[in-house]
Image (cartoon, rainbow, N blue to C red):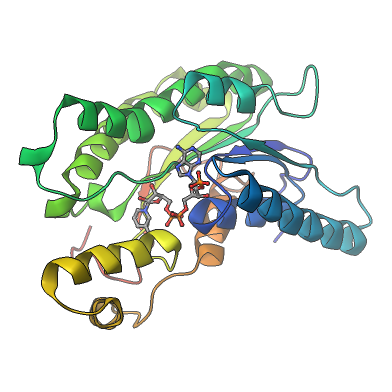
Length: 274
Ligand code: NAP
């Protein structure tokens, strides 16, 4: 299915690996020009090279121009980082049609140990940064009559995890904000915004949680991985490519009537009916 977004410009945050990279890959495969970012230059440039190979493959197969891939090494949670990525799309007069909000997740822990600064850091990364980026791009999207915003949050928004209090709190704040904004006048002006709530996807972040759980419980990371995998009805973890495909669909022309939703790809792990 042609998603009808070739030639659009997307900003995909925190995308040198994992879910952000999966989203960037799926968008580039659709012919979307991307600006990606991450803090560490080497892996970011490597990811950009791999995306350019995907872009070249698409150009050969479609006979169209290869989509552009621009990499900006910066911390998306800082004002300077956001300014750098926002000015990176294709030259004067080129604005973003698609925004994929993403950043690293906050650390696990006991809320008794968190002071104001830990909360502010989590809120900055997982609530206020996405809101700032939306604020920067959304009116331009509405003026042009097309915009797609996808926020990568977490299954913890729907089924909170006790040791992830910083994540539960910050991401729920973003979710509430999006629920209101998605139903504003922007909806009739071609802008949709949805949240993607990953369950367990096989990334470095998931592996890091196995290591920390193993340290707390006296198991090996391999034992934690096996027991968590056994709890997923699908019998496996998700892949960044599967996640990216859902993201690309939410950014498509066809998804123009999907707005203000919380989509939970988790292999059936969430046990509720709704
Ligand atoms: P990951 O594999 O650790 O990748 C994180 C990516 O974000 C890397 O490219 C990293 O590069 C970049 N990044 C982190 N902090 C950044 C910052 N401040 N500014 C710019 N780039 C930044 O993580 P993931 O599994 O893809 O997870 C993505 C998000 O989904 C996280 O918020 C995570 O908590 C959430 N999530 C993931 C899962 C899962 O199963 N994987 C489940 C629920 C929620 P640098 O380190 O070089 O900056």
